[in-house]
Length: 231
Image 1: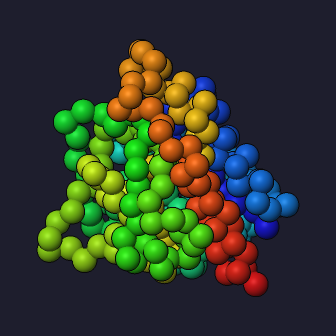
Image 2: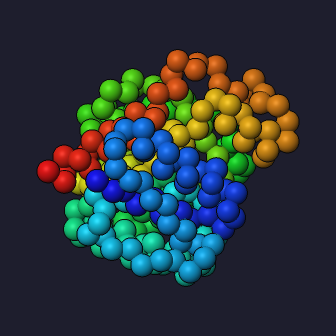
């Protein structure tokens, strides 16, 4: 089994920090290949979807990622995967891209969210296979300034929320998006806080319940969904 990780970063160090780390996390749960494809920094490669059992779309280090040619190509790949019922998971900006594809909207927040935040599953989230085995409330890392916002006229299958954001959405039978970054360890998340806040993690942004840091289960579940779909 092979999984394609579509990287939306402009800078190689950010690709290594997030997309390569996600690929390594995925490899913990299956014996196949998790291949990272740079979609923005260089000319996007040709991707044969017939070779892959699932697609994961990363976050981004650009708040205007839509202007890049590779963003459009990534959308085209996701649309083809969706039409072929290949499981797709978007993370952070990847989830926002999926939201736009399904007619939702994004907006800038008043200030960035960088730190550890409590995620709460909705009733639908508690029943969803992507979050199987997770408690109703858990902690995960956040690093974003844009979010999907809710329009009362739209029927959104929201799976998780935090105080300020929609955190997870099921867009279709095999398409999910999540705003948070379950791949980050405590050390990695705290380093990001130092990088972006230029200070030690404050009492507000630090993690207080490391036993609730169980979000990586999402990736394990995504692998299992892809495996079952492939059978």
